[in-house]
Amino acid sequence: MGNLATLLLQNVRGLTGTIVASSGLPILNSLVLWNTGVSDLIFNASGSPILRTFALLSNSFVTIPSSILQSKSIQSLSLGSNGLIPSPLPDFSRMESLRQLTIKDERFFGPLPDSFAQLYSLQSVDIQYTELSGAIPKSLLSGPPQVLLSSNRFTDFAAITENCTAVVLRVSNNSLTGTALAALSPCRFLTTLEVNSNRLGPVVPASVLTLPNLASFSAVSNNFSSVELPVDQSLNMPTPYAVDLSNNSFTGPITDNLLKAIIRFGRTWYINGNALECPRHIFYPTLATFNKTLNAIISPDSLYLMQNYLCLPGNTTAVACPSLFLVPGPAETGLYRTFRQPCKPLPWSCSGRQPALDAPCIAPGVWLILGSIQSTPSNPIIIGGNTTVQGNFSVPAGTGITVNVGSTVTVQGCVSISGDLTVDVSQNKPTMNGTSVDVILFGSGCNGSDVPDFRRVSVVGVSAADCVRIEAQDQASSRSLSVVFTVYSVPGCNGGAAPAVDGVSS
Image 1 (tube, rainbow, N blue to C red):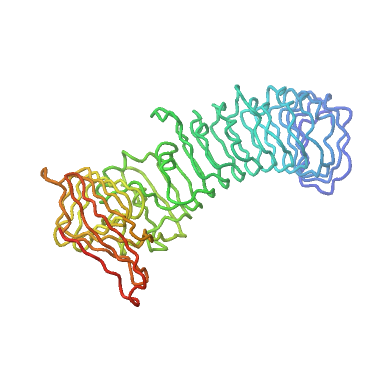
Image 2 (tube, helix red, strand yellow):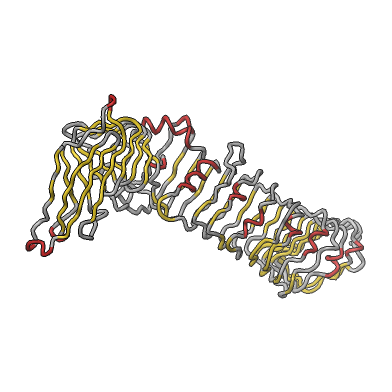
């Protein structure tokens, strides 16, 4: 065997017991035992001075041959599925040539040793499916460029102040909690960060999204519910290529911060499997306006929001968030939007119309309308929340507008009103006697005139069971039109008769 350069024993489960090579194999370069019944190896590592690769995979070893841990020539060491007895991770510090360490499915426990700092040639550490725990030491993050530590029990990262050299870091399926990611802010060389299936959260730190070389950030199945924006949001900030926050704890309407993060960071976003609803901040009255402004507003190439609650009001299958531009983009932009069921219908009705894109129907919330809106006989304006209109606001004769009580409409263009106003009090019905609520329209009349009055004001959303009487009046000035309602309790309700409503005509 003295002239043996490669020893590969694979898929020979009938080979059992101990292999003895105590005299040394001087030209041995590679020794691999894979899926055998061998349980021990008596081997003189110093007698094999050019041994580069050593692997024990799916055998019957209970301990690592001690001579291997003394080898100064081995560059690649692989251990996996041997059934080693539970023990702390051994000391590899004497293996001065070690470049790649791979350990999978072995029952090592306890913390990682700091001895990795002495392995100056180490390029990759791949330790997965063990019971190792505690903090990931600085020696790993400031040593090998590739650190793969998924499926263990690590809870934190050791404090790093400088010299973090990790390029690829994968720590999925561990026990990382809370703000552990904040420790990685010095890791300026990171290109890939994967921390899926931990308990991190609730805030994605800005220090991660702004790492200068980060290309991919994946934090699927954690407890994130918001994204922190950096103090400096200058245009020359780095942008990761892909951000995956699927299966986290994002709920409700998409917030300003998340919307800004989507716009500013990441070329491809995955936020699948959360409980997000359509944002209530920006929308486009017409598809033409949508196409015109799309390139100036959105930076991602792709945005995936499968398995969220992004649906047309009252529709459990069709998906649409006009306020988030969630329709296929123009072909020339190369933008794509992908959605899937289930859909949760929002508690707001636009009488079957699609909000924003084909009719001036505005769901509750705070909205910015990029353009002008005009009511028509077939599609009256419906406003459920506080709204700013960048263009003109027009309610011609023979048409109308329905506004949720308590809403404010600010028009940056001009206001033209010849039609009717209907106020819906069903969403915000006062219960105290004498309570006043209002609808306010801010703006200027067209052609330099004052804000005009509505032709007629009426109220909907009350019934005999409400036991209220509502009086309404409009109060116009040069810059605003305030429609004030005073609600009075009516004892007894006259045996179920409908309450009195005083309509106001200007």
